Length: 175
Image (cartoon, rainbow, N blue to C red; front, top):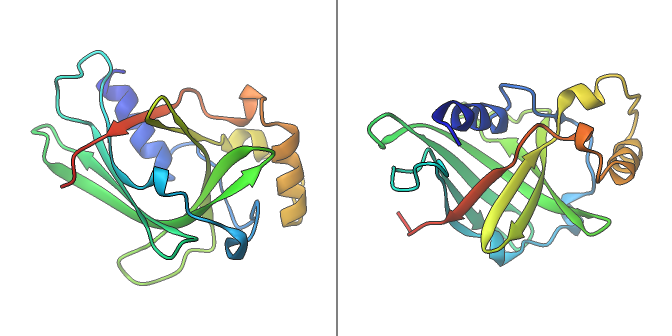
């Protein structure tokens, strides 16, 4: 993973470049159940330079048994935090695949209309994140939550529904 790729991953998860944000839902928060296995501190490192400081640090906490608090912290050139994004969200199961619906928590206290939707999994003790690609959804007619869920169900294994690449994070010590 090159530093440029890390930056693109960071930008995409922050909703700046190409990821899918929507006001539609794959399922209600009321039916969500937080999985403690996702909770903890996670580091995204350059796989070609694993001895370097992580490019991104992710903090995930269980808020109430249903929702998570998520903090995405980008590292600057010196390895010190340079930018962070705070979110609240929950996971939804779609035919055995987990998707996170994450809403930004802006400093001004406003509540955004849209949330980020991404595929999430734990594989080999690592957190694997995959953004949905907004280009896939642009020409689709999605009027209701049921339309959105049906489209995702039908395309779970369709690479065109996802941005290129995965974001892979390993457990990190508490900070």
